[in-house]
Length: 142
Image (cartoon, rainbow, N blue to C red; front, side):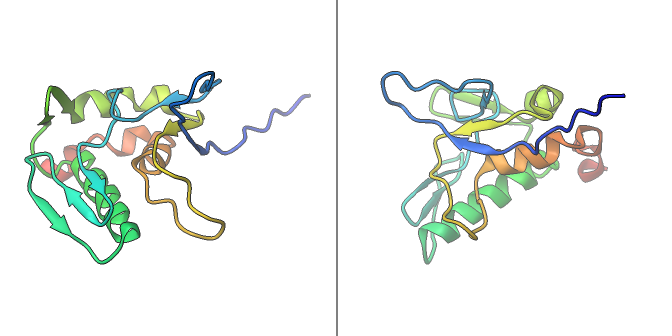
């Protein structure tokens, strides 16, 4: 009997250079339905409504953006967030989690150095996609 071991999905960095390809990874940056409506610019966290929060470091900003994305997918805040011309819909993200199961995910966030936590929304998606039935958002809304 053959046993197939599934490698743990990882996050790769999506590059916007000529010739770069995602391969079998699924792109989950803001150009996709899975994008994070919270943005960071250096040490500044920018909420979907445009309000800003200055944090002590870029790492702290990435951590906060990732935490807010996780909270949003868990049911905190509105189902949709519009940033510019793009509308992010929590229901579409959650419905699409099975498509991400056991897939490497590509985002434009820089990769952490060895030993550092990966504060990217793609890491949140990898965790949630491993158990999509547990993250419908219903538990957070009551």
